[in-house]
Length: 376
View (cartoon, rainbow, N blue to C red):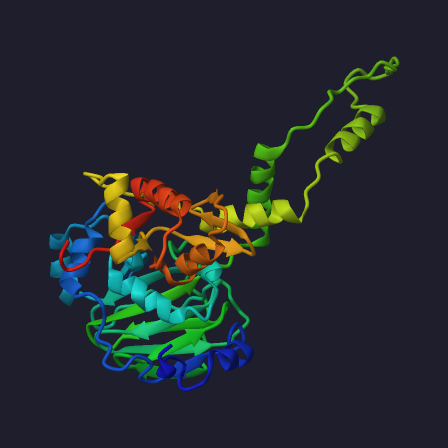
């Protein structure tokens, strides 16, 4: 890891003293960093139907939010008409350099990582004072941005705004970030970033699902696993004074039937692995237009190796592995799968046949990509 990324402190110190506790400003976190994409290329990307893009504008009447795709011709004239901001999610799915940037933050578990977002704004542009429910690293690319932050506990939002804009914001600290500078903010930390000139900021965001979301999705998961015997029966039914009344006897039997629903640690692991690797609804995997044969695939990966596609997520717990919402069942391949999950690439001196066969299926599904040499 780049030692300057955290200002000279170790990941252990960062996790102990800063993570989810307090902000950290790092000057020159990535030396000579000028960004990963030009404004013109970002505008082109925002016009792609597969891109999650938003346009935020501050008007006299309030805040306005539009969703992409956007035509580059509609964005280009706005460059000198601030304040506005273009937000593009999941840059790591579109640029190899985006994925490489995320890998510099491997000291945070992949299970917590969400995506790399980039924001473009002309002078004066921003998205208003707000707070995030998750941790975020704000890395400055092109241009300069002024950040004002506050540990305030008043998180009341403006009613009716299309964005989560704070109704009251009282800055406590203020910095101007230059290219390569980075600001870490823990969850619920109020902040407001205003472009000092035309600028682009890269946000490394982390997922933090609510208890409600996890519980709801777990119940959905259990619904697909349930196979309970029996059926409601009442051979001892007696005459009721009120036909419309739900009897205590019926409720007692229902309580006993529902109590039959049980789960254990294995179910929690299986659910977590599937849930944490499940692709977002808008994500698609692109299968090869002209797939190579299994034999050619085996030859190529022995020379060049294989890597996960940008959209793929591979996580594991002990010997249980998951990719894109599915469990992986492979014998004696744990070390290889751990390496693929940790580094997103895999090169081996010897390739077990069952691993090659599984990887070929993943290749056909668009889950992995064959690394290409300069001779391919």
